[in-house]
Length: 195
Image 1 (tube, rainbow, N blue to C red):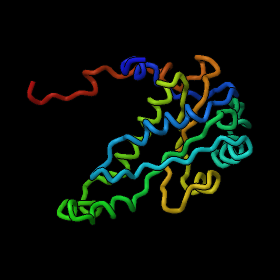
Image 2: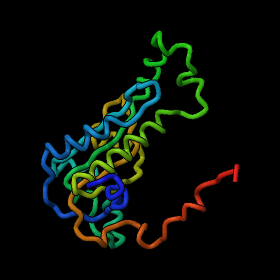
Image 3: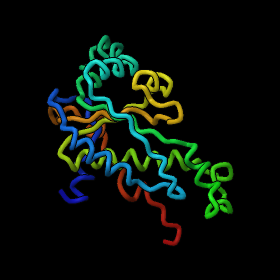
Image 4: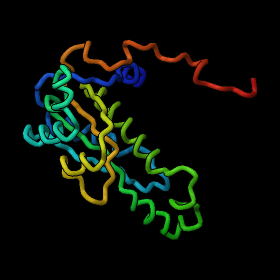
């Protein structure tokens, strides 16, 4: 699949078939995601992968799926065969910017933007696009970090960004709100002060 097709197919999916995803496919997705850019090439990207059914139920419970089911929504998190928790290791920036070739740079304490979030977002997008490239679907859920940390056994020195679900989409109606709302036009999102 070429890049423009991968991008055009990217949607947030909330309904999956229970079919498993092969470990080698998950590994290819993660191998792509770990290649995301990072400030100073600090390489802070980390990923927790949960595929065991009981562990996925624990994650789903911690992420509020029982309350969603009580509101009449279909199960999403517990059905997705793969959970990935993209994380950043913030300490990697401190170590990298203390190195001789970087110590003169502004580094973590002098940046106007905390680049670990920028770099984590880049890894998240790589994860989503790599999933589509494998012919699968993905969704993302913002979850309180403490709840996700406990449920997915995230190492203490990793900071979770949220939860990505991966699997085979149940159907095309499982797509998030993108189908209900039109995408903003290029003119709405681009400012060209020189024109």
